[in-house]
Length: 340
Ligand SMILES: [Zn+2]
Ligand SMILES: [Zn+2]
Image 1 (cartoon, rainbow, N blue to C red):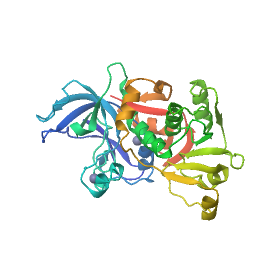
Image 2: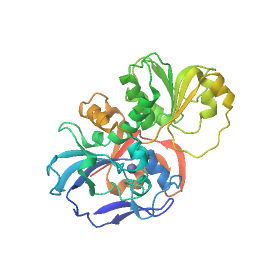
Image 3: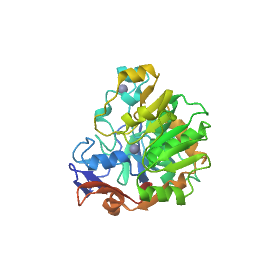
Image 4: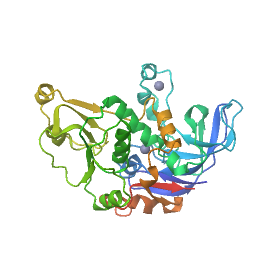
């Protein structure tokens, strides 16, 4: 089977790999139909996020079961399914504390990062990590469960109220999923800050934002303007502290390395909460339900689909130019998927 394999920073290749085979009773083999391209994939390609060499990348997927072990009683061959790619053991100290997103085994078990992922035709997982995908929901929308689940985990931690005035920094897929999730919590007012002209144009022309929500370019807020600031860029904490209201919250979601200078006294004196969140914890089923019920309008966010042989073009359209070894702001799609 053809697969996108990581060989080191800026070195990804389309290669032939052996198809997986069932060896344990609880395993299933899923024929992948759609895999979303995630910011993590772009950071792996550019060398900003560590992945194991020779691993097949990709982790946001949906497909059809083509084979199952004898211990899989809850699914059948032919079932449409969504894959939860984030393994947890259930018995390490963190798992036993409910912190499954911090499972001690994660660093050696993460699909598309440390074990083979889903930019390929077949993927082996177990019955614990698959969920049904409704018949009338396209595979590419099912593939949005993983990023949506991460966003729902963060939103749960933020304990929002409908009255918050919100700023979302970054209008990429994660920023837009935050927008959709916060609206589910009744938040009717906010601004998404996005500096890419192409993304801004796509958000506007696809009519994604409902009234009360605005799109703006550069983040230049008034002092203490927002009750909640969601930073998906991972690089605007200093500015956010200036922009957050007394008693407000700042959510840090982006995974970018950089240093910021903050004054701890201000955090105390103004009762500011800074909340980090990674991966998903007890929200995957909720994400699956929202997607199967088709309440979010995800079709407006998924703007491009490619074949696996067009992978380098696909990431280039997201501002990750493999030939030039360069990340840029020349982004011509919101969420992109590889379809099989
Ligand atoms: Zn992802
Ligand atoms: Zn664990």
